Amino acid sequence: MKIRFIFIGLVICCYWSCKDHTNKTDDNPILGDEGVTFRIMSLPYNHDFSKDIYLSGNFEGWSGGREQFKLKKTQDQYLISIPKYRNQIQFKFTKGHWESVECGKDGNPIANRSYTFTIQNDTVDIAIAHWNDEMPKEGPSTAQVNVQVFDEAFPISQLHRKRKISVYLPPNYNTSGAHYPVLYMQDGQNLFDSKTSYAGEWEVDETLNALYNETQFGLIVVAIDHGGDQRSNEYAPVDHQKYGKGEGDAYVNFLVNTLKPAIDKTYRTKSDRSHTAIMGASMGGLIAHYALFKHSDVFGKAGVFSPAFWYAPECFQFTAERAHLRDSKLYYVVGGKEDGEVLDNVTKMTRLLIAHKFPEQQLYTRVVEQGNHNESLWKSEFRNAITWLFNIN
Image (cartoon, rainbow, N blue to C red; front, side, top):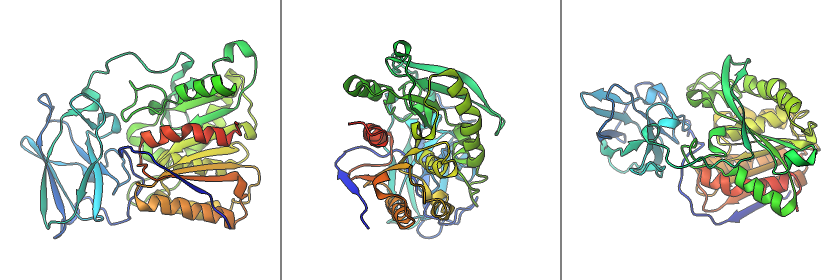
């Protein structure tokens, strides 16, 4: 049994992580001897103290703002005490969603904060420079001219919500009359435009334009914005004991039965499964993996970046029961500096697939040795994933 792992060097900073570590997280956790209290001592001069602040990190799935991690307010100060989840944690503060994550004085993303549990009953003072949603988005949009808004508020009837859908069209779309394969991607805010991204964009449009100029390969990309504080639930295929109802089945149902028919009707697509792919990162990677095996009649390819398999361990048995697919392609990528269980789970899933007769030549796993769990890693690997999934030389 041979499993392909390719290690490459990449120096990047960490943004998100996929690991929960499964330690108990109560609404009022017991601090214990090895706990830590984070105390915010400095905030932007115009901070509205009626707003809540949340702690989010790799110990709770980088949710952006779970109720049990809301800081307590005492006069003009915020604080939170948490127990030891592991020897070291990574985290950031938000106002309840990732669009409002803390940022630097210049409005740019900051690296993850890190804390190592070495002192009993420790207290750490925190200074927050700015909030992302309160910073002016200077400069023009970075989205290329061949990116368009399909619908600002496309109905997700399965979840009784609406969502912005954007579409990237190949550079020759308006002149060729050709039909094109389609890639469905999660977290649309972060794919095309630095003005809508809160963690750096993937530069999907620039990458595909360059690829077209070099190879003449054209691809339609359908980008679905995530649902803010509903993101984790929408991308979760199963319920989670601590983090709530999984809405992944309904979300994938929306992609398959509502969005895809609308895209195929509007654009010149190659609508068969061999030309239809899905891709995502973190929780988006989890739902991309799930969608491929749940609807293998619709999706023939999947790019699964830093998947949050920890959130849904049921996915291993679910996959084992469906791993006999012969004409599907899976591209996994994970950073060598991500939480160890992310790599362990990808290794476990890869071995499971091969053991259950998934063709090894249809499976590619790439480990970026210096890579962390963030947009920088995923942007750097996007072209590699596309060229392998679509057999571009």
